[in-house]
Image (cartoon, rainbow, N blue to C red; front, side, top):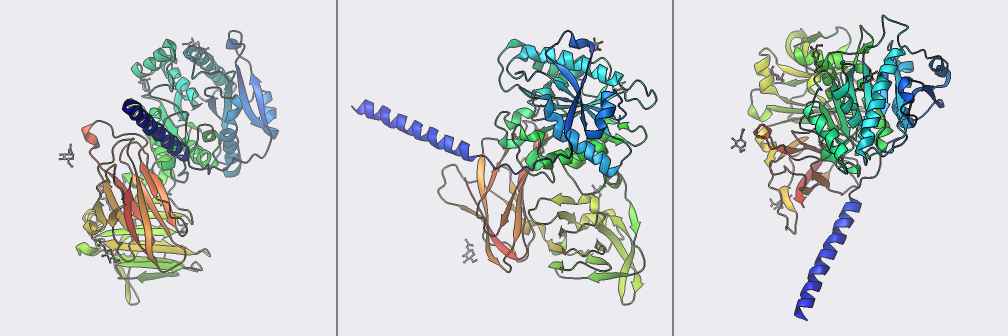
Length: 586
Ligand SMILES: *[C@@H]1O[C@H](CO)[C@@H](O)[C@H](O)[C@H]1NC(C)=O
Ligand SMILES: *[C@@H]1O[C@H](CO)[C@@H](O)[C@H](O)[C@H]1NC(C)=O
Ligand SMILES: *[C@@H]1O[C@H](CO)[C@@H](O)[C@H](O)[C@H]1NC(C)=O
Ligand SMILES: *[C@@H]1O[C@H](CO)[C@@H](O)[C@H](O)[C@H]1NC(C)=O
Ligand SMILES: *[C@@H]1O[C@H](CO)[C@@H](O)[C@H](O)[C@H]1NC(C)=O
């Protein structure tokens, strides 16, 4: 009897554990906040015949077109930059629609002087993720399709493209990489993969699959091709986040919750039409074009810089300006004429321009030797000025004040910061380092151009050790919250919680950021998990009426490699109107 009850209790515990696990798993889904891409005209798919059609009657190659452009496509007249879409497991060639349509619209609206021609292969909606043999057939067909597409441009020898861009969804991205191993010439300069399992297939069911992946790893010919791999993060149930990375892929790999202006987990199919993502990737695609040749740039370093800018760290500048600023010190002469110069010596303060400004304003922040003022955080809300932050030497007399005649650009050091309300830009500066770099500098200056929109600028200067807290993660069996910060400093904007123990995907914690006292009804704080490896930062906003904690966890574990000794950290961008208490729980 005792044995039976022991067994029964064990079973009960296991069953309850299983049910709890299932509940956690089912709750572990953020609601889909992707917007739909809007269509203007009806999509048309124009069939393109080629030699391999005889061998593969089940497959087809199509050109994507809309409305009045269909006429050219039907006459096989193409004059843009070729892009080929490869669908994934059980995927349809029609899934190219969002990317193709948004790109067409952008070339009509922005008139950059070039456009993209989207092609797509019909792979018969086959289950390429379950059957390795199909991968070989599909790769063969896509290889022939690429040559066929490039032939379409033969009429115009001079501006004729010699390269193609591949877009692969899911297993389609694996085929794109497989093509690199068989193409004799270097004709694929850019591959963008969406939710592609790069390191291993979700299911390894046959030896063909194994061989295919094995070949990808041993013949890694990605030197002259840039591979950009995007993963939807935890909302993608089909492809576990960490198998979208591969150690031997030295290229851009990002998880969508981390992508500036996307900041969302995206599920496996939604990644094909999620408007926030499609827009950002399309911007990258347009910036990847060489102005001289009107074709995709042949410089892998430039391509990587473009996608790093749009997908990893976006400072809001135009790409060419951003690259230039990073590589050399450039300065700008401030325009004479109607402008106001202001200086505020407070340690923490907020500039509220509720009705915008009528003439250009320069807000000066003095660089002081005092360690209490060494670190400077500036958060701007709704400031649409692209070049807004400068360092300068105030040598010129204007009335009673000393002002600057020109300034060194700092805007490239800032970044677009996640937010629910308003566009936010964040700049963190070590002013002593700034002073070392440019000895004559006396001020940091924020430039506000005339606008009728409300603009807010928050400024926080501090002694770093006061704002940097090392956090011990709570043990697995703790039954109460661990207090991290009893009460944040008055008007503080910036805190950094170092979490060196967070290294593995099985770890998961909750961070609470609770406002204690607020001087306003509306407030907006953001916690960001900053992970030094894997482009996998995640964010959570804390506002009035939202008491949910920040669920902190990783998409991929820390690589086993001493170079990655850096610690994960949680950056708090607080609202100066509140003081908060911060605690953790598991
Ligand atoms: C790829 O296609 C081209 C053109 O159709 C063909 O010449 C070449 O042999 C193909 N490569 C492979 C590995 O099948
Ligand atoms: C990459 O391009 C360079 C020059 O264009 C060429 O010499 C080299 O062989 C190419 N590498 C591969 C792996 O194709
Ligand atoms: C100072 O110079 C270093 C090295 O060039 C650079 O990495 C850093 O961003 C500069 N810092 C500032 C605040 O200008
Ligand atoms: C936390 O702060 C409150 C006042 O805000 C104070 O009464 C309390 O003693 C503090 N607790 C700790 C552990 O410091
Ligand atoms: C890694 O960090 C530990 C402790 O923080 C330190 O002792 C060690 O020297 C570091 N290793 C490297 C390679 O930086």
